[in-house]
Picture (cartoon, helix red, strand yellow):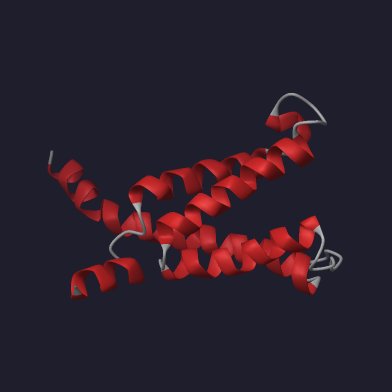
Amino acid sequence: MAAKSRLSAASPYFLSLVRIAAGLLFICHGLQKILGMFGFARVPIWSLFGAAGLLELVGGALIILGLFTRPTAFVLCGEMAVAYFRMHAPKAPFPVQNGGELAVLFCFLYLYLIFAGGGVLSLDALFRNKE
């Protein structure tokens, strides 16, 4: 029972860790599209991929900081749903067949952050505690 209690006590910190890891990975996708990093061709900012790249870059940074976590996660969850249904779902019925596993995983991760918030190690929590 003590181990379960210790795990539960660490849960808010691991929420923050998962949030930060997701933001870092998301920024990488934005850097691919906007700056052409990691072996991806640059895309025009005014294109659909460019808009996605900007969302991933700015949204990923906000998620890392834990600033405006819930509204940012809402927008990014929607972006990932659109990405899945527009780019992946038409190829095949299941994510494992159409390459959409990452979009689905990010979508549900951001859906979770909408409800869970940024965790204790976030600017949201810092500003909330100052009020």
